[in-house]
Image (cartoon, rainbow, N blue to C red):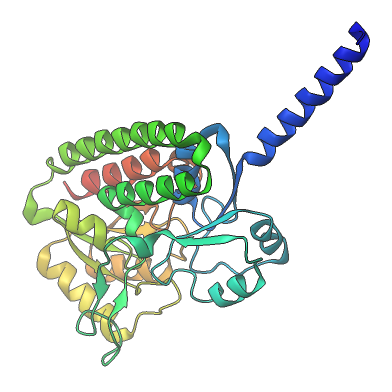
Length: 299
């Protein structure tokens, strides 16, 4: 075989090998900004991630689009927040996907907090799972392990890569948790009352010793009753709460009314439903922004 012919054979083999490597990547479609980051950090070069919900977008208000459905159908793995977050479109999504596409509701794999009838806005309503697990770093660690294991199952050739990347990301989460505990320690326990636009911080409150009150329910479309707003105003006055917190995706009208009636001031805007623009573009940035805003306003 001549040099030129051998070169052609080598080039063809190299192209085939390169194409095979590209095709071996796991294609992920994510309906959670936090899970998009986890998938990118754990998957590295072996995974391509399409984030269908963008930073700053309210996942409670999301509606499935034809373009997003096409992207999900072209993927190998669809990541969902779970715990009912995607309830309005989950059936349509599952029905439209090819059988080869795996759907993983990550939150369903980790422990839940619930909102009981005695705590909710509608008497007689059954307990509802709180879907906002990402506001707990320890729950996000569990979610990272779930995503890692999914990648290992789909792509056994790169197990060591996924394990190493997950270990590094988990170490960063533990470092973040240590920082949060130091920052929260600046705030006396009797000042840890957190009043927010909607009920998204149960997991955060459980981890760091806060009492929470929310203006709206677990989703942003649960309008507060007049009685509930009146009760919150009375509680703010009774507890001497210094500030209440808005959220980057919500209309602040009711919150502004409560600040006026209660005498509390606006403590700033929080990222409640995932990553956002600016300093909330990363999970660490989101958490640091929230904790700094809360502690500095309540001190």
